[in-house]
Image 1 (cartoon, protein in one colour):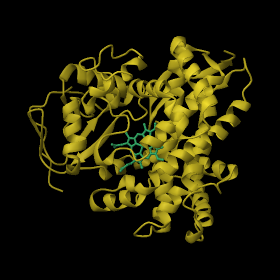
Image 2 (cartoon, rainbow, N blue to C red; image 1 turned 30 degrees about the vertical axis):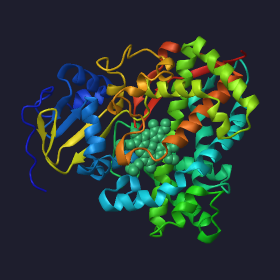
Image 3 (tube, rainbow, N blue to C red; image 1 turned 120 degrees about the horizontal axis):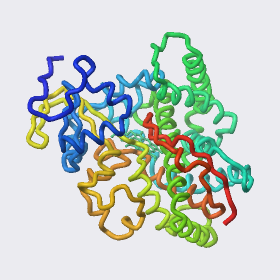
Image 4 (cartoon, rainbow, N blue to C red; image 1 turned 180 degrees about the horizontal axis):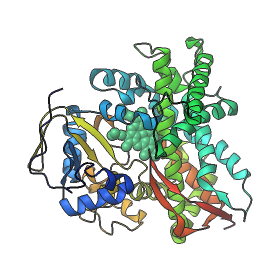
Length: 440
Ligand code: HEM
């Protein structure tokens, strides 16, 4: 690769002589990115080959108009240690023609059948979680919702044959990956730490499980296992490793993000009792009028607005980066090929230059046209352009249903409202959310 020209004339924090802005970023990523945007504007130089874009039009230009001039693979590879080992053949970690082929192969799975299935499954899984709760008893909300979401997501990705035992097995793979993503000390994969050993075992179990589920591809049913079916019948036929990598990245992308979104929405509702009451009333009416499924979803417009607003303030995806493959102009500056360009939902969703009462939780802003008329780069919880989230409508269906189901039955009281903090890991995790379910 040819040497990359340094970023000439772009303003940004000077940082430390040797480490640049590494320390400032890693000790408080959200605070650091926010202060960069407030101090330096729409294009910020973060290092010799790193730029942050904060102007909404520039974000749109990068992710949509010039999306083809950026690669994800290099950035994904450098984060591989954080994911424990990476899943190199997955669509998510591919670029160019290979990505296009894999996205086309997977896309049919993410149609209406999957969303209907999700809406129906949430009922059964929600019932199980709520049956284990006692009024007045303290619960770890993130832990409880994680069990619900993992069962839901694995059943959706692998099909109805998937048992609770299988879900426990997948969680043995997912958990060490999540732990590694928040670990301050990342050792190479070959160092036999207990986490690395657990991870290797998890991968082995997952391969065995997939061999069982796909031993006869012709028997994989399109209705009962739409995602697995789309993959095993797709062209070209995926190799066993591709199948494993695709399913593992799907579970990982779906699991923590959805879990965090449900918990953040509940935190916001617990802090805003008037809004919570409106959700309760709408949910009670919707659940009594319509059976589980998408027709119920249509009866939950206010809960939908609550979730949209929660995804604005606490977007589980809080930043994303790409490597540019061409010299490009952004906001009057030249960004040369080979630069890592970052955009941040955390920064743009709360930018007071573009949002009225940016820090305020106001679902009402989604009920009229004002928020929808904002430039697309002001609000992108599911990304933008060709590489936007393939599971966006599935995720929204799940989150709205779970929130409606929980809040129609109980009011959740926060045990320590001031002790809740966002932890920017692979997703923006809510830390310290203990709740007590109360009768309405
Ligand atoms: C609240 C839940 C979710 C959020 C906030 C979220 C967010 C995102 C974002 C921001 C991207 C684009 C990343 C980028 O531009 O670099 C993305 C991509 C992706 N998401 Fe999601 N996601 C969620 C749920 C899901 C679900 C449920 C699935 C699948 C079952 C999923 C699968 C994927 C995949 C496969 C990609 C990569 C797309 C590609 O590279 O073409 N996500 N997601």
